[in-house]
Length: 210
Image: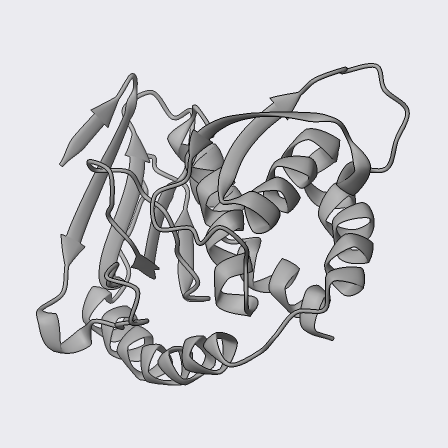
């Protein structure tokens, strides 16, 4: 269990047989995750997701769609956790197949640029979009070189900063793009923001691949 200010997070990692191995040395672990607060600043959230733990204990990716939210007050009734877990495990097998498909889906550079300037920028803003594009092109995170520069997100002048752990020098497939998204999610300072953005990843990937 971890404590972030008034928020508490509990993560239970499932056994190795539930892992997804993309073949890059960074296995995805299926985890049961719960977030709550002691002051009512966020709702109790229960979810099952894919997480990759690299470079310490950072949450990197979660693609499972199963999520439940509850108002935490004196009337709170906990859900059927066994039922949620059973349903999540069933959907996790389908997700493994989806992740495997992403590994074999090449992303056209023009399509990546178009998506960066469109759906990604609209959801996450120009800086996050530009960072994702830079990671896909170089394997490095970055920041704006000229914040006031009037350019589309994928053409923004960027200063490279961190080498992103596990990222190739150039994204070769849809899975690599999903990991770039996940890295940007990880940089969110607030844990609740991380979870909210993480849950956007499947939708953003759908817009890229549609």
